[in-house]
Length: 122
Image 1: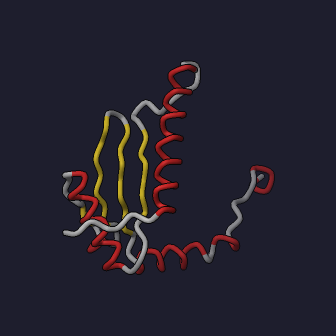
Image 2: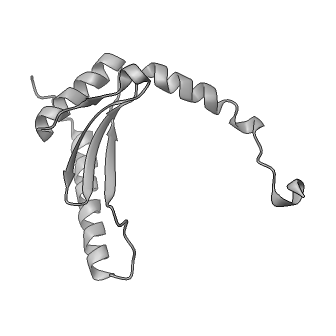
């Protein structure tokens, strides 16, 4: 499997992400009163492109992480790979186009739904 070329914009985003993670870690260490999630955090990378390109990207990342992808696409789910570092999980996600289409269709009804308030229920 060939490595994808890194473009300068990617290097800037990568540098900013790593700098931000380090700054967050330093901040949390210096401020013990700030709460953190008991079971850790997950950082997700959502792939882009066609379904085939996205699945290929998950496979490429799986090799880099030395992890096995989880394929739930046949059940209407996602194609993912993850690796945990302490309480932090890095996860690469491919959401199939048909799943996104179903999500957009469902969300198209969201403006029409208005939960009743306690006053309206009385």
